[in-house]
Length: 74
Image 1: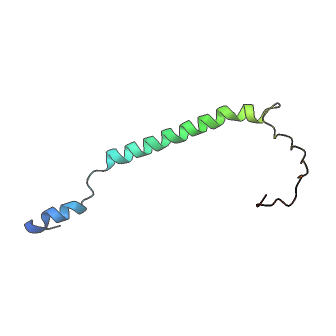
Image 2: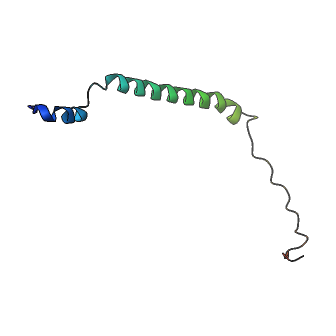
Image 3: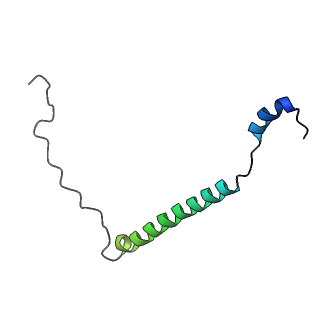
């Protein structure tokens, strides 16, 4: 592409340049994030899903409301 000298600084702003290092660092960083997330999930799976794993708590017995129609001006 032939660019006039006066426009060279402006055209240079649109030149993407070498993004190889940035692309590499972003991909490796994302891969590390996924690896750590899967390792954390794998470590938690057996204790949560085992025979004596995490179970939901029994629902408490609802207590009747002593005053079903409370008033603000009391």
